[in-house]
Image (cartoon, rainbow, N blue to C red; front, side):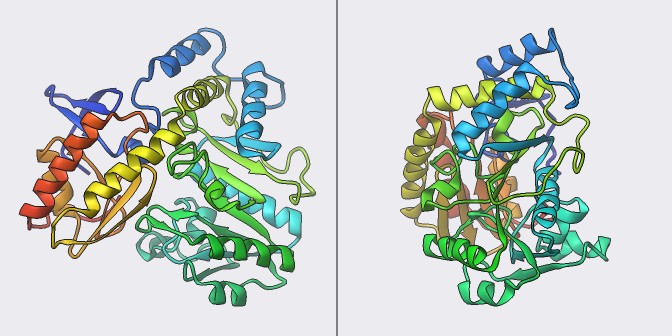
Amino acid sequence: MRDLALVRGEGARVWDDRGQSYIDCVGGHGVSIVGHCHPQVTDAICQQAAQMVTCPSIFYNDKRAALLARLAEVTGLERAFLCNSGAEAVEGALKFARLSTGRTGIVATMRGFHGRTMGALSATWEKRYREPFMPLVPGFAHVPYDNLERMERAITDETAAVLLEVVQGEGGVRPGGGDYLRSVRQLCDERGALLIVDEVQTGFGRTGRWFAFQHHDLRPDILCLAKGIAGGVPMGAIMLGPQVQGLRSGVHGSTFGGNPLACAAALATIDVIESQDLPAQAAEKGAYVLDQLSALDATVVREVRGMGLMIGIELRTRVRPYLQALIGERVLALPAGPTVLRLLPPLTIDYADLDLVLDALSRVLVVGPFSDTGDDDA
């Protein structure tokens, strides 16, 4: 927990209960992808709230139908199941993979993070998240990320799916290599397993393309989406390719999934992303930030990495004191593990605010060290 009570947001700024403003590079863990309280999204929410908030999936709905069509257009995958969060998207993806293949095994990766519900947690690597809730769902194996040889050994005729991130977010902002990812795709094809790509954090322009898999011409069988999809309103989606078979009505469900309010917010968010070409903005702004950070003369920095506006700064020490110091500089940032400082600003952030963030980082990273004052939970 941070010792701040945030009460208002606009664009890339948030304000606390004392009226102090901060540049928000947390963004609800990447949720506020078009900025806080974007007028177009806010208007869509207000209009829909006055018309219809909820409509169960046993009935058709105009906003849901429009969103399904838009998701098919931007992802290239024609079928979707709408839910409420990233963890729910992963849970549903695991169920669909097992039902489609008739197999039970799931191969995930070390440092991968997929959520904290029981199935998603079983796929998540971090032991401090897992161990208090053992035993977890059986049938999960973990292999090193970006290691094709270990992945090849792990996929067997009992593997229903491989689940991975194109860029590991909570695991340290670690992009996977294109050759590795395409080779995993080929292994899945050869061995009858499905490829589940978790783009909960990387989707909707974050990495400089609409989706991170597009950087590598990767073809997911199942795509997990959430976070930025609805501009801050809770929502998730599972997109399904043609290899996913055997699904029928009633095998999975969600009371709130695909409610008209969230669908209206998602439609407005997608319109903003498209009309402002935010993926291209993320690519340009991210390259600018990476260039500036790479030139920073700070001995505490081990490595800078990222894609688009998903930036990780790996330190030679624990990150928590530096996050606390940034609060004093009126910048909010995240950890990605015990030693990585992560930036997930809105894609709409302007260069003036980016320069203020870079100035604050320069002061904090060069001046340190600081004493550790908290745990490392994201």
